[in-house]
Length: 352
Picture: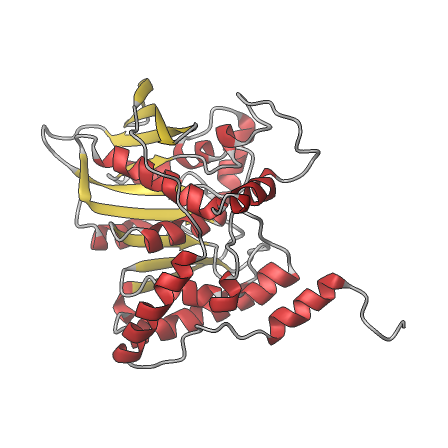
């Protein structure tokens, strides 16, 4: 018996290494890419399950203030039946009357602060340290560059984590709310991804109605699990003309099955049966995509992250969109490289 495997985890790792997704891209020509995307994208989106029904936003402006050359707003909006979200908006000061600017949806990753770390400079030493560690506040920095930026918490983070204020629920028994919400969602025919994407699109619809926002010039960016959300947001809504995925490049057999570096807010039933992560990213082609990879990232190891990127390059080449794919390979840990973002969005969302 001792010569046979008794580890279920080892079984899953070996199955994942042997697995070849049904819809992995293997073509070289534009015709092959277009046929593949036409077949693969609907099947991939179907793994998300149902989306919550849209509801009126019923926006309420909670606070507005000036900070660091920006007008900052905190809104409360409804995003589906029985649930709201706080939407933070950063607007550059000094806009001319009637002037409209591009807007970027800025998704956060895992961590104790949710959207706050992305959109602010840090009101406490702990938050400032978190921002510095990951170069995290791209929502603040990109607003300083002239873009309107906005963010909400995905379910399981910030104000929308049931262990945090104002919820104070304690029946999770120490388990991850991301996984608990996923279980609840799938019982209702949804996924955490479909819920979070729907909420992000609700926030986008609301922000597009603000006077200084040009709804024809939208981008999306996010770090780690925020990269997951940036990817799925763009796959689900073609209004996002440019996408930055920060430290969310790898291969499922390695970062998922081997490293267990994922949770219920990042997955959909049978997704890996269909595609691997480079295929999923490649479905964005020919839209502009900037990928950030940290050479010292301990979440998504650089060897398999770059293997993902090489496969992605092949997809963009087949789509005839090589010039729309960029890489920021930076000498840092898990965080925002920030070296190419301003020029990338300036190029693809028109000058600000």
